[in-house]
Image (cartoon, rainbow, N blue to C red; front, side, top):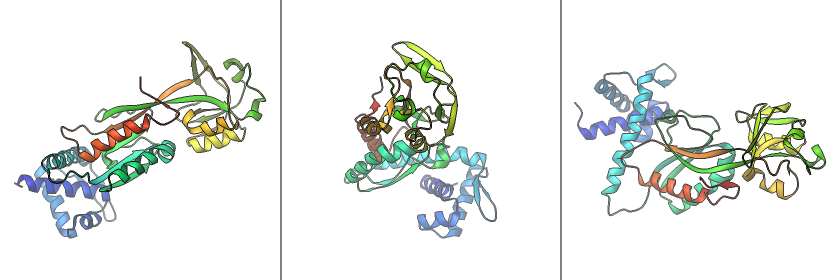
Length: 304
């Protein structure tokens, strides 16, 4: 039976192999030989009495048991590091690796600024920012936290609301000439550029406790918000777009707020992370900084 410190070492080796997708690559990051890393993985599988990683000639993949234990392994390693930090009184600096997954547009234009400021404040952190609009499998992504616009359905995570996204129905001025006196019923006759999965052919609007659901003809669909904005600017159709993303275009008159008194449903901006009795200093600091900075971004609304 391995001693407690040995168990921590075995768990770290397993996590590094799962993240790297290769025993040899993980061995290099750990300063081990490939046979040593393989032996540690085999020892952990023996201790847990289950196969964690499925080996083939050219690749590795997690077994179902491996994916489940990877979540626990990361949590245990983070808690162990947090306990070490608690008693490392001589060194108050924040250091270590931190991986953040964020949506493409929000991450590229807003979250990246927050992260750059955070890294300048804490140069001892080696930070990775990965941009992805698709739902992730948290354990396999190997991240410390996940920022997402929209719901997060993974019940194994702690989910903290950060802000709300205000969304407008907009179009290029040339599509309508003038939006004065425009009503939801009249706007239904205009073609729509739809952002999936948020909008299909049905759009819900609300104004002072009134609601309107309409079904405009979809002229174009895309799953990319940058393509959505370009198509809207080109006059292909109207679209539902977040205010923070088009504030300059609205100011310059390139886009028109079709229905100033009506808004599409707000979308939540949320951050998710694994529950733990002890959190690492770097994750706690990042969550505090992100919560504070994101509330100051023009075009995002505070959480009620």
